Structure formats: C-alpha cells, structure tokens
Length: 443
View 1 (cartoon, rainbow, N blue to C red):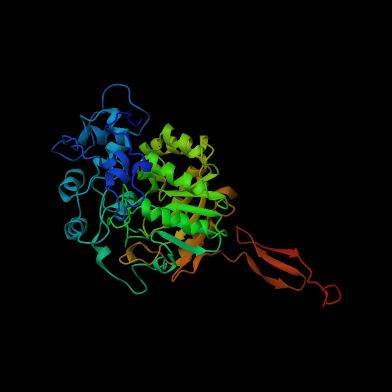
View 2: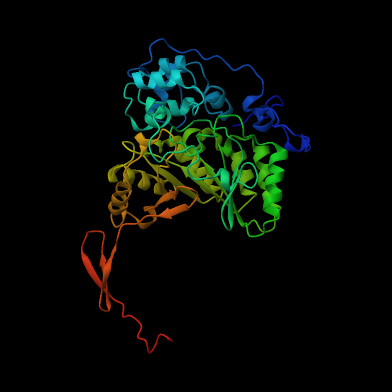
C-alpha cells in the first residue's frame, strides 16, 4: 500500500510550470520513487546461497518458497510493508557488480558484461524479480532475460539501433505515428527492470526521455489536430513507474480529446514489480475506461502468486488484459514452454495476444530464433489448446513496416471447386467452395 505521508506523496502535476523548457527532476516526474530521501541500507548475509535457509517466521502473504528464502537470505530485516511497497522495490534495485556478486554465482561472460557496461542498455533488477533467478545457473530462462552477457557487444548483420524506424516516424519527441488510426506514446525511458533484448535499448535508461509537461503537451496537441487517431498506446520505458498523479494527468488529458476512443497501456510491471498494482492505481485506471493493458510476459516461471494477484486486481477493475511475448532462443522457444505459458495466462485472465519474432536490435543475435521456430510453436498450439490461448505470431517489419502476421500454411491449395485444408493433426480435408462463374460474377 502506498504511504499517504506528505514526504512520500506524489507531486501534483498541475503544480509544475507549464512553460518549463527542461524536464522536471525525477522526483517530480516519478513521484516518490526518487524523493531525495536516504535509501535504507539493508543487511545482506555473507553467503549468497538461499537453499536450506529457514523461511521467515510469522504469517506470510501468499508467495512462493523461493521468494521467502531469498528474502531470508538477502533482506532479513526488511518488513512485509517495505517489501510490498513498490517505491521500496525501485529504491533497492540491484544494479552494480557487488550486489550481483552477493546474489548470484556470476559466469565469466556475465561478470565481464556487467563490468564493461558503458553506454549500453543499463542493468537493473527489482529485488522481487531477483528472487526468481537461479543462483548458480546462468542459463536459467529468467536470469538470461535480465542479466547482461558479453554477446550483447556483438553486432550481427541486419541489426540496428532503431530497426523499426521509430525515430523516422516520430512527429513529436516521444510519439510514434506508424499506423493510420493509432499512436505510440513513450512517457519516459525509465524501467524498474531492464530486459536485455529491449527493442528501445537505444533510449531506455539513458535519461533522455522524461515525462515533462512541456513535451507531453506537444504530444497531446499533435493528437488533437489529427482526428483520425482513435487509439493511444501509452508505453515507454515503463509507464506504471510514474506516480498515480502523473499517470492520472496523462490519461485525463487523453480523455479530453474527443476522438480518442481507446487507451492502452504497455507494461511489464505486473511481472517484475507486481507491488505496483495497488487499489489506488486500479481505482484511478477505472475512471478512464475504456482502458486496455498489454503485459509483457516471457516465461511460465513469471506466473507467480504475486503476479497472479496483480492481474486479478487489474481484471477486477474491468481492464481487459493481453500478453505480448518475445520469442527468445533457449528461453521460451519450445512448444512445451509456450503452451505452459499461455495456459497459465488464461487461468490468470490474461489473453495471449502476440508472439514477436525478436527485433534486430544491436547485440541481440544470441536471442533470435529462426522464423520457422515461431511457426512450429503456432502449429503446436493450434488445436492442442484453447483457441483463446493461441496468440498471433508476428514479425515487426524492419524499416517501419509494422507488425506482419506470419502463419502456418493451413490452406494447401485448390482442386477444382474444393479448397484443400490441412488441420492441426496434419490431415487433409476438402471444403466445397465453387468459384463464381462468369455468368454470376457481374463481368
């Protein structure tokens, strides 16, 4: 629960001068996340292994044994109230080599990548999500998604800093207008946890895209004068890392534009920062309906009790939930893994929406699979699980071509007046579909 003390209350955005030429301080943009207070120092035990450690005493909120053991090992003095406070989670993100060394048995490649760092995509992981990582297995799926590797420094053919040409389609800083009736609004470049395969690695974590009022008002004005825009996707960075007040202001301004029918929020917060989903947040979002939410899920191990509760709160607030999953080599590139993921999502009231072929950003070749792998996964899902659980496999076409569906070939061809179909089992069937005669075609 968010504290209501004056020292933690998010700054009301209306108090920020609208004539500002420079982004406000992060404490203004993100509310109490960076409020200038001293970050509490948490004591960590000297030995990083958590196996065999006794769970924390007393009654615990519903969580996994992995999370309980991790807390006992590394944050034994942190109260439930702090651990479940999203502000605390962000203030205590794991970001430097010394912290990772305490919590993980780093491989040589991981250590070298963290040390080299430089201007590449920064590293940062919430304590909660750290608790889900394997201590001694660098090949664990979740660990590979957030811990740097030296492969990130290898540039392969076809890769680019901005493979989707978002900058070329940005009429106003932080706004991408690729499709006729919808736009992508990037509210900030901050994330609580950085994915190593991020499409916007050129931007996120660089401190160059702030939720400044002056910039956002230019975005709103562009949307106002383009009445064909009916759908706004609010993303980033992580939009849910904004304070409730700042996010409320953004949604209110969008709702004041008559032709904006739908607002969508793209987020990974329910997965890496489920503490962010509070009753206050869901009540605020409910006021701006219709609001939809696309949640970035990667692997079934992310479907924890905490994430399930976060999704339940959002769904109970009337927010339709969809998932977006990037296909990643050695992480989720099997039918078995993807089936477990989509089935768990369905149980959590999250509709599997997209599987993305991994974008060709710099240093991402070690994550990319052949396109045929994605087709094999769709073949392995269609007919073998609920239709609602089968996402659309897409490639975001390089150069700004947009999301292009890629489907298995279920239509074999035509034989006379029949369409020959191949079903999920590989069997062939005929569907009578006579071609219109010239006499009845109007020619």
